Image (cartoon, rainbow, N blue to C red; front, side, top):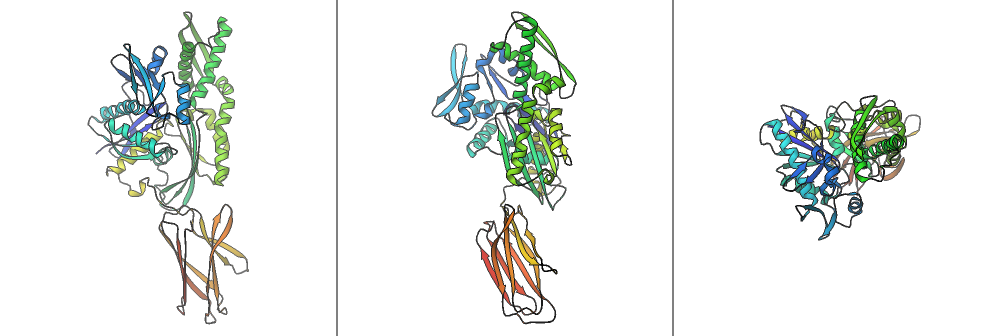
Length: 505
């Protein structure tokens, strides 16, 4: 059996198929592996992808871009209001829901965002099925970590309307980890991974803890004020300045001319990720004048230097918030089309000099690959165990420690249940004490922030003094609700004590 993985982004969409034990991204009918998430409405047809994006210069009022920003939102939402200001296609209020106002053949119709998303997802399904040469509909679709239930429901509904059988919605950072097999080749042991995703209109940085094949999101930071379009805009403004210098004509106030320059700058930006320079040619930019300009990578990096610094800053903020340092991160996964930019690689590498930066898979394709691998698992044709699934599980929120005294008399803390341990969990520990003692005390702590805080104390009294040491068998059991049950039994006498701590995690 085969299955499909879809990454539906703010500016682009990508589809991968799982077949014969592997996941591969599929090119669309234009030969592109990534499809612009753009829909253009014309008289009797809807156009999806690169043709719609390129035709936006002539048909901006009937071309919908970045529909994901308003999917599942109310008209009065802050994100909807921001989208309304930016969109060339009018957005109106109908029943507290946003609708796009489309005018063709002197007729006006109102389109809900879910209908636009359906057309894009339908394009993804047709693209995948053409590669598979069969009517496969089973799919896993990715969502940002911050998506609300209403947004998830809207996306699922659009996917089902597009003909998909949605096996699961998974978070984009989890899909990125699955694509690189992180956590799947090491069934035990805790590690930390940073997922850095820089897409067309937003930046998200997520810190995850990988423990026994389980992914736990420690925190995520999303910034919708920075994305690949900001780099394109900076380059387009430079091109406008070059045109003014050469032709003494200012085109910065012409929406049509700037849209042409944005298209040219976008293509040049992609070329500069692999080449040292790129040529930007715009046909009939202004008053019939063509524009031809060469841009070096060094010039591009200089123009975007403040934007690059802004793109890196959230990493430091996130690490500080979760209490980790750069040395605590074991791997960094790069996602999103703008994560291809060499200067960003360099800046991230400087933050993590001893950490592996994972970018061998194209960053704008990696999330779709992870989704396809998850889909392959769910249709039951993959070899790995069900530990590969991305599940929502309860986990221990903080380290549970026991305080003991070593041979030198120094107090030491030993971790019995590490934070992130999937629940329920059970741990066995042997507490040892001098034989001359008639009582022993077991103290349990949880690590909140950096300082351990006492949870409970158990005292075993009336122990028989003896020459050899006392051995106390201790069993800790934490349930899914975070409650902790602790029992202690002295091996030789059988004396026991037990307590239950409510919601220790």
